[in-house]
Length: 210
Ligand code: 0O2
Image 1: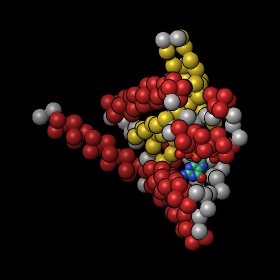
Image 2: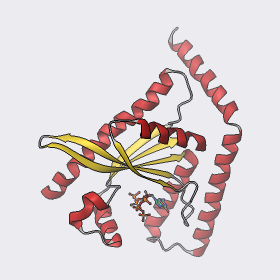
Image 3: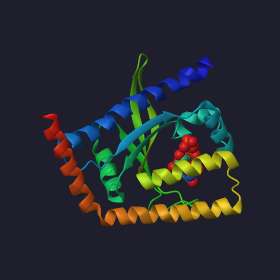
Image 4: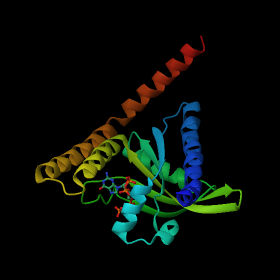
């Protein structure tokens, strides 16, 4: 157990640091009263049981976890609109506190399950008492609709261990299509929504200044 604590410590530190940094980006947009492409950010370290399950499924030896399991540390950035995702990815590519090592576009190429999301894998330097340690972190960028679908599907996956009954599989596919259409509809009225949000933020600021 002590071994796992030691192994996971830099991952925990990376998740905490990156949560602050990525939330900070949102704060900067808010301060400028411009539409923030980032709605909210979450982060987690993969539980040990899930690490072991995934290593087992993918045939990853435990002494190769550091290089072969890219999502032990994971961050999620949720956006209101599909177009915001590109902006967030651009912002990540421009940063110089980490290096982007891989990108997986499951939006242009959705998974067979119906899963849509944009994954960016970064190499992030963590400062430890033994010096710098670079670790892999996976950042998943998705819209609120994509996140809703993925969260529900993930819970069902857990319940059915990937073996969905046919009717559930069918409903999940229809729900994925509905989430896709919701994203499209929202993109079409994006201008209207953003104008309303800027107006609402200004009104709130004026009220606070009273
Ligand atoms: P958890 O519980 O989220 O940590 P693979 O696992 O083979 O699909 P790989 O190489 O690990 O792929 O990388 P990928 O696909 O970029 O990232 C895997 C992660 O993406 C998953 O982590 C999920 O978080 C998410 N994901 C991928 N496919 C699906 C899907 O069909 N449905 C849902 N809900 N999420 C998905 P874990 O380890 O599966 O789980």
